[in-house]
Amino acid sequence: MAEQSVPGSDEPNEPLLRLQHGAKTFGPVVALADGTVELRAGEIHALVGENGAGKSTLVKILAGLYHPDAGDFQVAGRPVAFRSVADSKAAGISVIYQEPTLFPDLTVAENIFIGRQPRGALGLISRKAMRSAARELFDQLGVPIDPDRIAEGLSIADQQIIEIAKALSLDARVLIMDEPTAALSGVEVERLFAVARSLRDRGAGILFISHRFDEVFALTDRITVMRDGRYIATHDTASVRVEQIVREMVGRDIDQLFPKEEAVIGNAMLRVKGLARAGVFSGIDLEVRTGEIVALAGLVGAGRTEVARAVFGIDPYDEGTVELAGRRLKPGDPQAAIDAGAGFVPEDRRKQGLVMDLSVARNLTLTLRNSLARFGLIDARREQRTAAEWSKRLQVKTGSQEYAVSTLSGGNQQKVVLAKWLATEPKLLIVDEPTRGIDVGTKSDVHRLLSDLAGRGIAILMISSELPEVLGMADRVLVMHEGRITAELSREDATPESVMHAATASMEGAK
Image (cartoon, rainbow, N blue to C red; front, top):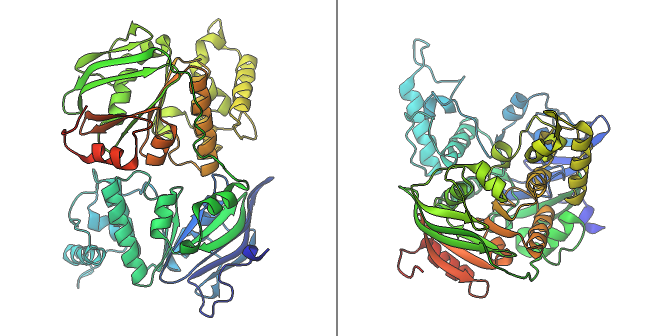
């Protein structure tokens, strides 16, 4: 099949980086069966695939964290065999991770040049030269960051820029950006993209890994697709459609990424009146009825997550009332919300939704500890049976229920969080960014699950920053701006224009 050929193999100029037929196994587990990618000078190249497709393993080989069991790995036309991250960096490769790790007590300049600070005539560290060099790097990137600022408290976006500056200071020609925009606002994403384009224009090669197709198609020059640990195809971005990329990623057609089915919408299950918290949100009135999916939309910082956490009782509020199934909930008491029939899938599944060191089975049954206990001890057999049942229902892919949940892909971790709450048979399910950071195939599974739950009469309050998800899944859309609901839109009236207008406008036209 033509598209299985090595990408760019007929090009006369040697690429900056080329990995052909890379393989990596861990005991019986094949993490990468045929990893192939080529990165040219002066291009931004997307690497896409479902969770578990082998992208992370391939990146770790490029970064020197893993040594491949097989394959041909070349940098600038020369074979390489990295034994460490230092080898990869010495070859001009730098990885910019989703959440960079800086030394919080050091200045920006010190973080950039740590371990290789410029020195003066007497061999002492020259802070003046270090500040000057850092300032020159930020000037090249067109970003005004103070080299003398302490790193603690910097935004994720600024931390990523600092990591890019560090890469430039090491003369890196290959930058690997691994899900760099997941925690960034729209403005921060645009700034990062401007930096990436400027680096490309100066001859660098950027490998960009993202689940967000709008970003992939807006930023990149070529796209390489992986599936099940294997190279599938490489395309010029301008000549391929999203539907083809999706089909290659999942190995099948997804006719409906948003399989929203009609549901019978009944009486109000959740009623929120006059909810307010000083400096965060105010005047929040909303209802969610049985069988209904209500989306809270808006820009980052609009107050959506804060409202959801207050409704569930995680965070306090100053004014207002929350009623679930006619029962008024006590503020700041999540157990009261759970007892009344609420479940909450948080935005950050790793830090707030799961205990990463515990097993899949234990995480799946955390909400059922009392019902699974006898004389104060968990009945291990009942725990295993319950976990196996819910794993099967949500199609959680794991080698064993006893594996740590940290070993699962992001999509399967999200399924575990959902299963944990569905096992409580909730009347109301609050889901905050239900498909963030998971692949397109699993997104479709999660959307189908939410639609099915609504069809069974569960009320769903969904917070999402992905406009297609909001428009595709919600029966009603509540748009927030600066802590207030500025519009309530029916499914028919909700359009990209109407949602974005309400998300960015002042209170004129508020409901």
